[in-house]
Amino acid sequence: MSHSNTSAASWAEWFDRSAKHYKDPMMKMAYYLDGQTGTPVSLEVMQATYRDIWNKLMTQPQHTVLDVGCGVGLFIKEYAARAKNIIGTDTSLQMIKAAQKNNPRNDFFVCAADQLPFNDRQFDRLLCYGVFHYLPDEKTVKHTVAEFVRVVKPDGLIVIGDVLAETSPFSGPSAPKKVTRWWPAQLNHRLTKFKLPPNFFLDYCREKNYPCEILEQHIPGRILPDSRYDVRIRVKK
Ligand SMILES: C[S@@+](CC[C@H](N)C(=O)[O-])C[C@H]1O[C@@H](n2cnc3c(N)ncnc32)[C@H](O)[C@@H]1O
Image (tube, rainbow, N blue to C red; front, top):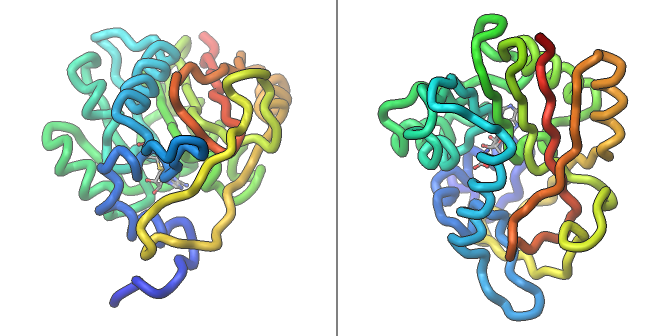
C-alpha cells in the first residue's frame, strides 16, 4: 500500500515508514535546517552526539550494553568495537531489519521499551536515545524506567538521551533555536511528541531511591526547535 499522500496514524507506523530514510544523517538528526543559513545538519554534529553520549555512558571494553529504541543501529555501529557486546531493541520491525543489516554481528529484538525480553541484571550499560518523546504517557515512562533498572546490573548506568522539555532546564546553548523543518513529503505527519520536565525524573527516582542526574547536552552545531536534556541513572549496588 502506498502511504505517500496519507499522514501516519501513530508513531509506530511513522517509524516503520521512515526506517528506509533513517540512515541519512539529515534524517537521523531530525530534519532541521539552520533557520539562519539553511545549512543541513552535518555529520560532525552526529559525531559530536556519539561522543557526548559515549562520555556519559562511561562504557568499558568488558561491558555488555543494551541500546533500547536503537532505530537503524547507528549508535551500535559507532560503539560496537568499544564494548564486549551491544544488543539492540526497537518496536519497529523495519528499524530492526535495517539495524541488523547495518550491524550483522549484533543481536536485535523487536519489543517495547517497557517489556524487555532479558533477565534481571543482565547489562552493564543501557542507552535509550531519542525515544522517550514517543512514549504515550507518564505511567509508561515510569514502567519503562523501572524496566531499565531491572535489566541493568548493580552499579551499572542507564542513559536516557534526548528527552524533550517544554522549557530548557539550562541556559545558553541548549535553549531552543529558530529552525526550518525539512523532510520528504511522504513523512509529513500530525503526531505530537511527549514532553517531560527534568523534575519528573528527579521526583520519580527520588521516590524509588535511584540516584539520578540531569545532564546538559554537549553537541556543538546542533540546532533544534525544542529544549532537550539527558538523564543518567545509576543502579544501586
Ligand atoms: C528518533 S528514533 C531514535 C533511534 C536511535 N536511538 C538513534 O538515536 O539513532 C526513535 C526510535 O524509537 C523507537 N521507539 C518508539 N517508541 C518505542 C518504544 N515504546 N519502545 C521501543 N522503541 C520505541 C522508534 O521505532 C524509533 O526507532
